[in-house]
Every structure is written in C-alpha cells, then in structure tokens.
Image (cartoon, rainbow, N blue to C red; front, side, top):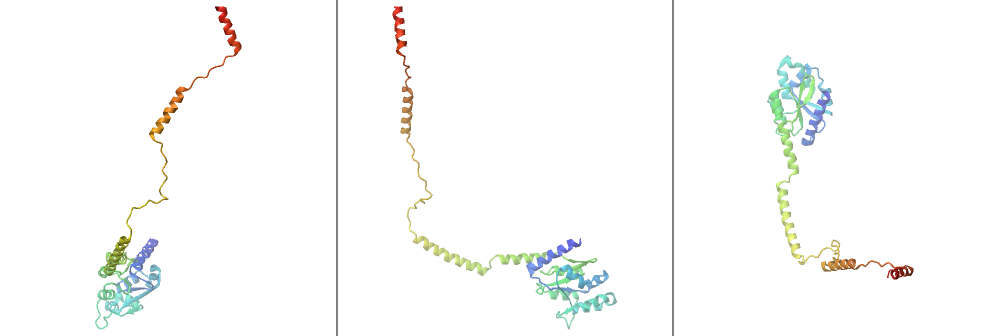
Length: 255
C-alpha cells in the first residue's frame, strides 16, 4: 500500500507541475486541524512531508490560523506550539483576524498563483479548496499523509489551458485569413501567366507500342501452313534392279 500511495503522489504531482507550473520548494499551507491530527498519530510533519512529496518543502501558516488555534485553548495547545515553528506568511488580516477557513481561501484567491498546497482535516475547507483550480489538497489518513486526486475543477482548468495553447487565438485566426487571401491572389496571378496548351505526356512514362499483326496476315499465314500440311507427299521407296528383274521373270513364267 505504501508503494501505491507514493506512486499516486508522483502522478498527481506531475499533473500540477505540467499544468500549473508547480516547482520546488513546495509551499504547504498548514492549519490547526492537520497539526492536531499529526500530533495524535505521532507523525513528524517536517520529516514525512519532504519524503512523501519527493523534494524540498516549506511549511507555512498565517496569523489567522495561529489565532484560531490559540483561541481553542488546551485541547489544541500542542498543535498551536507546532504551528508556531513554521514560517508565518502575511495574509492581510492583521488588524481584523478571520477564521482559518476564510484566511486560507483568501491566500488561494481565484487561481492559486503562489502554488500553495493546503494541508487540512476540515471537510468544509477541503470542499472549498477543491473548488479552486490548481490547489492541491493534503490530508492525514490515520498515520499516512495523502495527496488527494486532482479535483474536477483542476482537471477542467487544465484541459482548457491546453486547448488554448493548441488552438490559435482570434488575432492569429484573423492574421491567417489575411495571409490566405493574399496567397490566393498570388496563386491566381500565377495561374493567369501560365501558357495554355495541350499537355504532352512524359516521354519517360510512355511505353513503346508493340507492332501487332493484322488479322488478315495472321489468317493468310494459317492458310498457307494448312496448304503445306495437305501437300505433303509420301516418300517413294526405291526398289533395287535385281528385285525388279525377278518380278518381271515371275510374270513371264505365269503368262
């Protein structure tokens, strides 16, 4: 199961790298629910996350997340201590802190331009993160870190981006039409300049015609051959003189 989990992580990371330009170091935005769950399952986030993502990782949080964890008291005090060790990013809510949910979504904005990974166990926050294109979601399944499969929103955004890269823009289409029009006019001019006349066959492709005997000649030849066959005479056998003398003597004796 561990090997399969790592393979899925590499596959999903490749999707975000290829389509949304995610690069190392990976910035992981962590809230109090994730650190609390990690503490309960005795997971060292600082050690395990770089191994799982296969590269350098920056663990970050915000003032709003720290204030929310601090306000929950002793129940999540250990998670609050862990969060304080991470890099604190400016969220723009210094004077009027908001909930961790709102703060994280404001950090992502509409397209997650800063390429944040979000690590949370909050189901409502997870649903909101999945609605943002190009926002990877991390969560804990018992004692294992899991990178969730890219959401429908992310896959749709990736497909639209690839189609824009492949298909020409409106400006390019208009420019192509103009070029096609100019090319058509040039072709018409060239066609007009060409001399019209009977096209001669390629001498290399033309085969020499074989002389065929006429039917009359062939019939005459056949008749001659038949006549010759009919006129053939039998060869006469020459009889010797002494045989002829004997035959004449026999005839005289009979008479």
